[in-house]
Image (tube, rainbow, N blue to C red; front, top):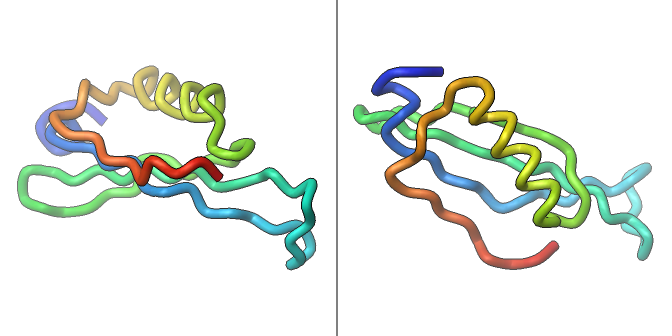
Amino acid sequence: MTGPIFGSMASVAPAVRVPRNGLRAAEDKLCALVVIGVNARGEKHSLAIEDGVRESTQSWREVLLALKGRGLKVPKLAIGDGAMG
């Protein structure tokens, strides 16, 4: 994941709730954290889909550090929905 293809942009997509057994329970706090990269040609690439807990700071930190460890360069643009779980 190095070079201009994955180093140009990254978009942090909204997290997707993952209900247990198809039902939404009050204690259900799991979500899927999704990171999509867009290269200079406008092509989208799924960079990460990880489980997390209520879009917590710690969950996002772990996802982003894992991407950094895989060689993702600092994105020129990052977008998030700003909503908590």
